Image (tube, rainbow, N blue to C red):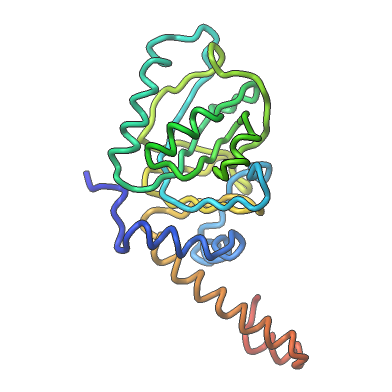
Amino acid sequence: MANPYRYPLPVEELIERYRQLYSGAVYDVLDGFGLPHQALATDLKPVAQDMVIAAPAFPLKGVPDNVGKEELRSRRIHMFNDMRATGVPLVDVRDCSFDTQVAHYGEMNAVVGRASGVVGAVVDGGCRDTGYLIRTGFPVFCRYQTPVEAFRRWSYLEWGGPVGLRGALSSIVPVSPGDFVFGDLDGVVIVPRELVVTVLEKTEDLIRQENDARREFSSGEDPVAVYQRYGRL
């Protein structure tokens, strides 16, 4: 099987260039490709307004676990070695199986994750230790905050395969290893792996066009003429 974390451009370059974009423009390009369902649920937001996330996805699925099965809990530490083995910066993407009771991410996940190459997390559930995450500038996007510990309530099940997170326009957005995750204050979009470079370049072109149009609108030119030059903006 081909390495899902290999792209036509270096990952570090992709990350740097994506970080110059914004989610609305990325979404518009995906929408133009006939992919309107790539935005995650509207209540999935960064824990601090200035946080931006951009990197390949490392998906994880967890399940409610009210007995604290040791075989599930003990194997989770191996996940971080699997993250490190990819050799690229990653976003920890968590499908929490619709659980809404506990924190599925927190300080220790961030500390161990960062040491394993993780540059942020997208959690379709809750997080805690939010003050620590903000103070250290570690970007986490989640649905809610809670102090409730996951131990004996929720456990890691599997990772490294496709998962499904709740969507803005669809019930589920599939996320596979190597798909690109981009998020800012407006929300999170998932770029399919095979389109990562194409979407990047098209979005850069769109933003350049928007900047030109913005300058012309601001200069006092006839707005009808400007709109006709650039079309949909």
